[in-house]
Figure 1 (cartoon, one colour):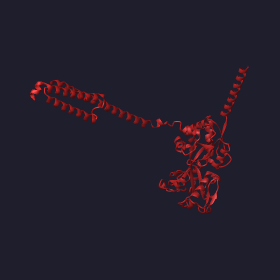
Figure 2 (cartoon, rainbow, N blue to C red):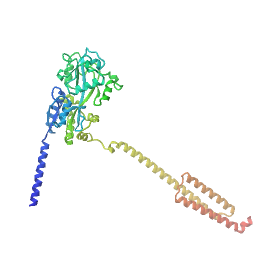
Figure 3 (cartoon, rainbow, N blue to C red):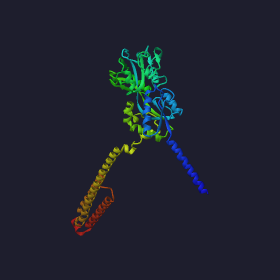
Figure 4 (cartoon, one colour):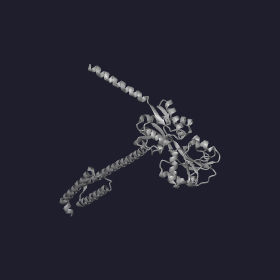
Length: 434
């Protein structure tokens, strides 16, 4: 009976877990883009992302407009748990509960004004004029006010107008328009198609990397980067390169979203970059290298895993250097071993030569007939001994047992010669000779 109850309990648990797993697999995730018309680019980009992920059955993604206009409203929507993903500018997402999934494209700041206005500084451009800074609370408005503050511009001397993208045409309602949008955005092509408009440049392009004013702003506001708009990018506008700034349009997610899911999303979006670019030119800047270059972001764990997926281990990264060092060390060891072996061989040959001559001394002892010959032989052996010691000092001989035995052999030979000398001195013919 107990066995049957146990089996039933395990079966019930398995069914529950399977049901929960199915529910998680069937969950629909929310992507917030922001309310039109203030978030025009985000809305279009969000639709393409949702269509791709849903169509390829990577994840069920519902794209919603959220509750307001601009990046900060999307951020709030994300923090309230009303969305799992959101599109925001890179300066809006600093919070421990959210993280970057993927930088998508640069959002370029365009400052559009009639060609009849001549101004070399931002202060000259806005003074006494109506300045359209985009929807209130938008990234455009925030950047505009940061620029005014950085360049110490008195906004009381101009009129700030919060306008939509559709109203961002200098003319009846505004004199100067601030727009923060993608380089390939169709909005800019539409606006600059009208004759008589030009783009304001903060500096001459030649001053880039030489302390330009825009570089100073980017140092004070690190989310921004200097950006150069090439000549004739939009129907002949501009007529010379324009120096401005850009932020990154970025896909964010709550940190609680599965790292595995985020990994799949990043992998699929980057893997289908060409298809996305054909649908919307804003995706042309999205790439694996662009992802790696943006290393200042707090990436989601899933994105971090994607970045590190093919990141070589320490040994792999330095394998060439390790191989070169290893080969060099091996060659040096082989050379040292060869030299050592050669030295040992030469030392062996030298000690054998010394032994041969020492034995010759020993063989000649029996031929000595006079004490004087013995004295000369003793001197020759001592000279030979000193020569051997000099070779030892020069490391031409090894201080091993063979050398010690050789030195003892020389001492024995000297003693034998001395014994021979004494015997010759005691012999009758030797005494007679004396």
